[in-house]
Image (cartoon, rainbow, N blue to C red; front, side, top):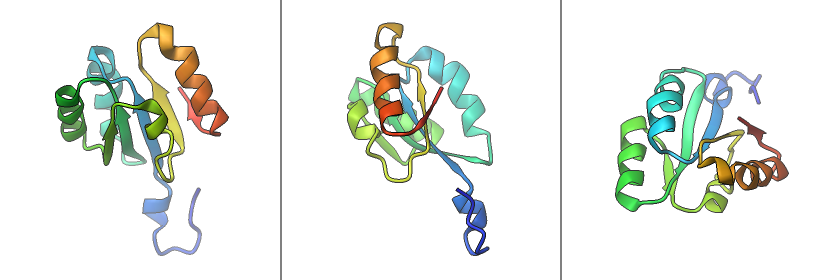
Length: 105
């Protein structure tokens, strides 16, 4: 993941993170911590509700936003996924991300 050529070393060493589920728990706990890290790029966010989705995207600086978690999993360069969806969906979302080869939290 680290570019040893030197040109874009800082940029290429960023972990590109996708977030599936951006309700109260994620926006109050996960995202404030992740957004303040220098080694993370918030690449894509997924949640239902177009207005709420846009608010989360803009507040935390995500590059991409979608209401479809499968679309999030197609984000170019994604390296990891935080599953913060309702607990009844954790297995489905985590397995889909793992099958794509992503790190999952």
